Image 1 (cartoon, rainbow, N blue to C red):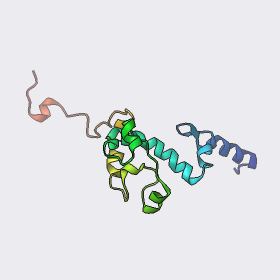
Image 2 (image 1 turned 30 degrees about the horizontal axis):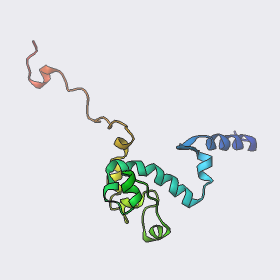
Image 3 (image 1 turned 180 degrees about the horizontal axis):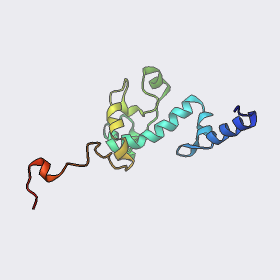
Image 4 (image 1 turned 90 degrees about the horizontal axis):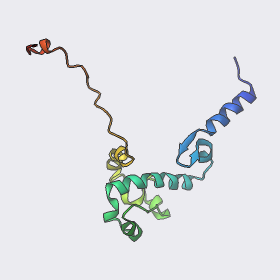
Length: 132
């Protein structure tokens, strides 16, 4: 059955109201300019870089004083190849991206994922152990 124009519009409006980033719904975020989207992503990843301790060796004095990541990319850094979702302390060309991604869950207080291995180890008699 084909959807009416009104039904399609309702579905799109409903998707636009879904939460996406802290303080933004999907629709609000998608209407931002590309540089503003980048800035919002950097605000999110600053928590991860602060957790990693990048502020200790940061070139920005504001980060060292705050003992937390406070930096945003400059226009020159965008052109130099820095990833637009990470603050400048991560470095150009992905030098520390993987380290930041590995620290994502601990930085936000999410417990590590459980091991996906088998939970059942078999009966003691199958392993050659005596059952008492």
